[in-house]
Amino acid sequence: MARTPSNMISLGSNAPNFNLLDVNSETNISLKEYKGKIGTVIMFICNHCPYVKHVNPTITKISKKYHGENIKFIAISSNDIVNYPDDSPEKMKINAVENDFIFPYLYDETQDVAKAYDAACTPDFYVYDSNLNLVYRGQLDDSRPGNEILSDGADIENAIECLIFGRENNKIQKPSIGCNIKWK
Image (cartoon, rainbow, N blue to C red; front, side, top):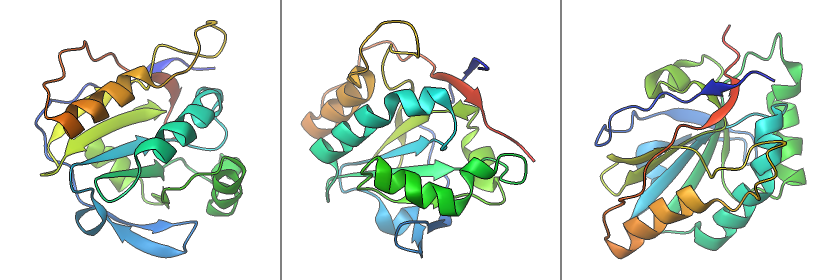
């Protein structure tokens, strides 16, 4: 397993817009049209990465707690499917069903969206406010495969709670660690 850290882009950065295919609904989703009233969580994930597989249950749990009109969740897979066929849109759809994803799972075929976000690894998390300004980037929590720390989503949940209740997020934001995005 590669241990690639996320790139910690500047807080306050504006989210690049995108219009990508949602493998679940088979329709395109535009960030500007889909964003949450209070905030939007954007996750770069994939099907085959052991780091993502490790946190999928936590992603599902947290999205079920918060996903709605105020907070939206969006997952994006940008991996090269020629060399990593397990990350194909057909298998993304199966993965979404198996993990009970209630949010769009988008396919970034050109990898332009991952590049625009400076995404480096899977999983990689970004939380944006109502104006699509970055308020959090980095890890879901301190858990990694094999480190014996329970995955609870504490870092993302704190960022979401800060948005909802209008509090400043004073917690240290740590990079995510995972498999590198599989570039073409």
